[in-house]
Length: 153
Image (cartoon, rainbow, N blue to C red; front, top):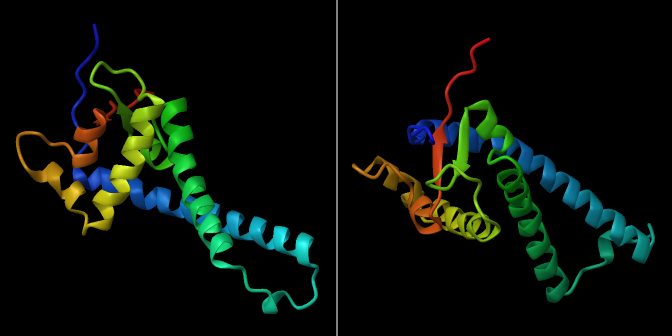
């Protein structure tokens, strides 16, 4: 028998997102450093500022960066249902039956959550509308973010 856990509120979700933003910033710095190293390996150290990548390389770099950020969420959600920010705020991503999200659900959720945030956060604010208490990306990815009980130590 699975225990029904309460849905996470907007304040906790936002706090976890802010916590994760610091990690995403670190991933961004590492990605930028990797691109710089690749640029140096292919072009040498001389006149690095004069080398301008073409549009294809710029788009490829952007897609790689977004993929690395999405990969952070994908790996964390598939491994244990939590990012580091979600762990700190006792949140867990799961399906309705309590199992971990599938790879397809993780990808769909990453894309939809990005859109939810991009459109003035309207997808996140949806969890304030009763009775659902779920964000739009929760609904359309068939996942839920639940609040875990405190550990008794």
